[in-house]
Image (tube, rainbow, N blue to C red):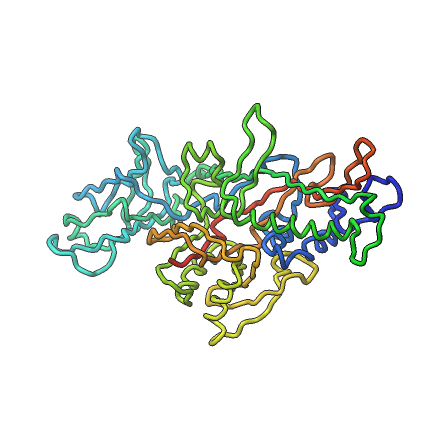
Length: 475
């Protein structure tokens, strides 16, 4: 039990938010009660705080740093790109080509190729030109090659094993265009008795967020409480209501905080924690000195799957095109969060011709309690679960699409997808205690007659891979 005034007299106890145990043995039932009671007014905050016991973060709840850092994405890429100085020697096209994986200074740009790698080059725009005069609709230009050697200035020389043109066509005008050519790494064919290959010592991109301390104070005067009231005026009752407000504010921050920021040297020590838009970058921020000055962008290379549709209504085609890309990474079940109006619009798309099940997400979240039962829609490549959030109402957001089309819009017609296996709230550990949201007593000062408590939290949001979530908006 945790007393409200540090043991000064016989006062009400408030054990349901007691999180003073060891940071590695936090009472799970306290977390369930804390966020279970606020899941209706702060559903995204509740979902986020209850997640994290499985998946990317494996139940880690607290850490001794104000700026936690973790690796993101796949350490090794299965595709690469050819660069602007990609060259093709026409006379030797069917024997070798130069990938041009180096910059203007002769420095290697992509060092993940070694001798013996098998690759496939596909120009997604170039069409075969069999006669050198007209372009025939006969397919893309492609070639399967084996890395033969690394020449001067990091140039990769390859041997062409198979190609989309016959040998007789090698002197024609077919060519790979650097802007539209993708290199797929398909396997390796090493010499049978060769020595071991070099190790691929690739470091993942590191992602971080900043701890933020949030505090609200509730008080009750002894003289004010000397009268009898018909309604419940106890400090515990007021604190429960105050926590609802605290949770709602934390819920809205998860939608609205686009940047993370630490205080500058020599200034007051504080931090602001980035919300989901910080990771998904639905606003379309770019990495620049101005952004770094005002706050941090989560990643220059990773963002959410953000789609702005030219449609004015949610349709099956619009929803499924977005979800199909979301499902590629992380869990095959995504939680779609939105206002009542937008979630109802998605629900209405499917309810006429597909069976919608009401299922619990506790299996994904590693929970023992039945806290979230959501309408679940099974699609060909995965499932979506619909979570209504009344707190965002008709919130307007600026969404910039990054999946083609280049559309951006200021709209109230948007929803957000999260992957509960990739999200967590991580708290700061202070004096051996986790600073997850909790209630603590405040000592009386100068012999005043007010009993005060505060709701206190120092934590931050962590998203394992931004490409597992994102925004969908209508234009």
